[in-house]
Amino acid sequence: MRYRYFHSKVGPLMLAGNTKLEFIHFPVCGKKKMPEIGWIEDNSIFQEAVFQLTEYFEGRLRQFSLDLQPNGTDFQKTVWQALVTIPYGTTATYADIAEQINNPKAFRAVGLANRSNPIPIIIPCHRVIGKNGKLTGFAGGLDIKQALLDLENV
Image (cartoon, rainbow, N blue to C red; front, side, top):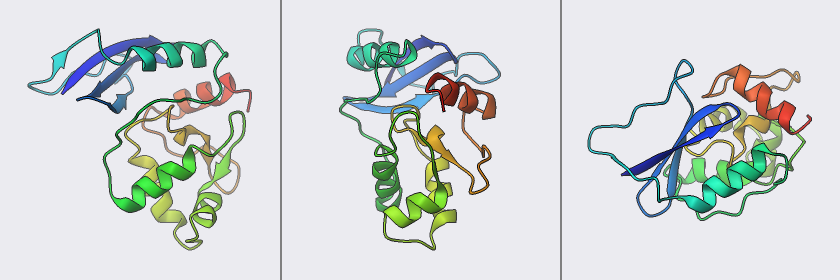
């Protein structure tokens, strides 16, 4: 696995994958996430992802167009495909996503799939909120989720 860091407005993000982007990891306690044993740092990879993330954080990009390789179950991949349809600057609930994938009772499973999203920001799990309109769990923490929503003026 190869990786590189991207210094974003929410802290150092680790981008990792083999030939395609497979993971984005948020900082841990404000510090860079450390790579796993055997991973190789390579700052020449994922240049288009870095460019698009830069544009996103500068407010110039609203929709990503990258070749991704998120690893997960078929159900998770279905949920993640639904997440990318949530427009920039809007939010959806777990129930909305469950309805969208034609499985309206699966809102809890949608929440678990959302939580397992390996490529946050680009697959915008931060745009999913609780039915009551409140922020719910997020891998990067609720402060980063709020910062991403604020960036999108939600």
